Structures are given as C-alpha cells and as structure tokens.
Image (cartoon, rainbow, N blue to C red; front, side):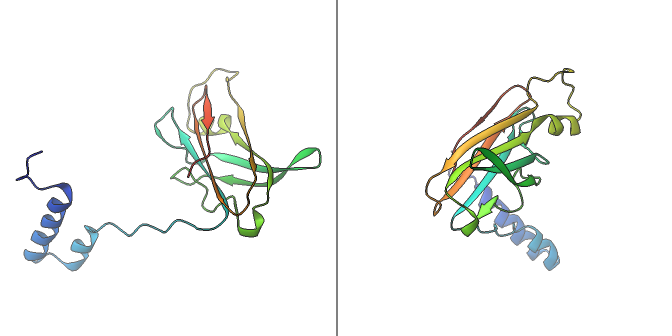
Length: 159
C-alpha cells in the first residue's frame, strides 16, 4: 500500500476538519462522527442471532419460540421477534432467569420467507426448524447464531 495515500480514518478526519474550516455548522461536523457502540450486555445470558444466508443479511422479523425441558416435554417460555439486526431486542434469558437445563429454539422459517414474498414450492422443504442445546453452567453467556435458507440451516455456540 502506498504510504503517501491517507487511510480511510485519516481521510474522514480530514474531510471533517475541512468542513469545520469552511464554516460548516456544528451539526454537520457531528454527523460525520459515528455514534458510540452500545456496550454488550454482561453476565449470564442466552442470546441468539438469525442470519438469512439466502438473502445475505440479518434475519429481521424471524419469529422464534424459546422452550425449556420440564419433566417429560418442552414447555414454552416465550416468543420473540428479531429486530433489523437479526437479534431479539433483549437477551432471551438473563441473570437468574437463565437456568441449567435443556432448551429448544423453534424458528418459523415458513412465516419468515412468506412475509418476504419468497416464491417457494407449495410444500416447502423447511417450515419450522428446531435448535436444541443444553446450558450446563448458568453463570456463563451463551450465544446461538442460526444461519438459514429455505433449504438448510446450521447453528453453533457463538461468543
């Protein structure tokens, strides 16, 4: 890389300085500064991230049911809908609500793709997808990214 050419950060800093020097108003100069990132939640929690690999973007609007194993069946705890970044607005569970045990996420793929107007067969290959996992140490943070398309999905324990 040519050491005489400015990098992106230096270029943007120079543009902001030039705008200020030309008498641009304070609001314009402040608009050039990206907002500070919201700090990530800390402590024990369960989070998820829906990633639409068919469209190559976050799975905004994905409806997901969270359940926990009780006795001899899964019992639904809550239903969440992902925000534009593909994540629910809040952790699925946090603090004392995160218990050790067996959990299930039920993702409503059919509803998601129908809302987007994706042309699928009358009998789509995937309708709902189940993601099952266990929480052993409820003092840790657990993150479950789910990558999906109309024909496949995968998941893993993220960070």
